[in-house]
Image 1 (cartoon, one colour):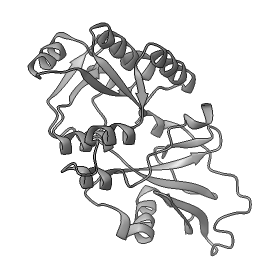
Image 2 (cartoon, rainbow, N blue to C red; image 1 turned 90 degrees about the vertical axis):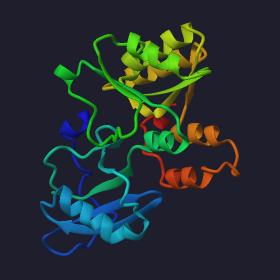
Image 3 (cartoon, rainbow, N blue to C red; image 1 turned 90 degrees about the horizontal axis):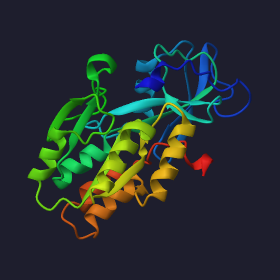
Image 4 (cartoon, rainbow, N blue to C red; image 1 turned 180 degrees about the vertical axis):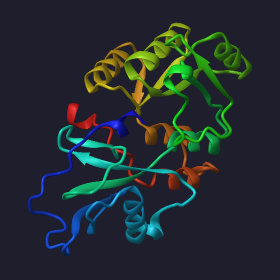
Length: 258
């Protein structure tokens, strides 16, 4: 993930959670779902030690069949970012463990076909390994910014009665926006998952979501989409979907901009 390459400072070392940590250790606030527990790790601890600490603090609540990403709260951005590559704890900080793949897991549970496109994978790389593409209908390379390419059109034509689609991915203001506008122009209802789309720039992301909402496209959240799809607590897959969304959704950075 691109954010993992950012050089992001940790929180400044001033009072708060974890004060009085043993010598040679650094106080860290470990957040998972709705919980936040202060602890400490050795100075210089990296990703593996942070994961071990999360497991020791929340092991009975973590579904080991899911994939997770560790994020660091960055004062510079006022939100969480993916843990920078090669990160080592050197001062007081706040980290959280975030479950991935809510949308794709939900689609698999509900039997909804998923079509994935990758923008110029030869130069930009393929879908990040943290996103499990097992069971998707298609994975297609493209150079056009919109994902409405002939192969996708053919795949949609094979699905009877398609009236709406759910879009998520990157970047909001380019591929997502152009895809959404093209689909709407063809009479398809489009739902964009705001907390599952992103851009390198928050400004680009915000303006794109605002423009799309003004054109009648439905801007929603991952939890809202999943619950709308099951619609009723008596749905046979409701319990599975409920377990999937129990962990709090990652902070999208959008709330502070609303």
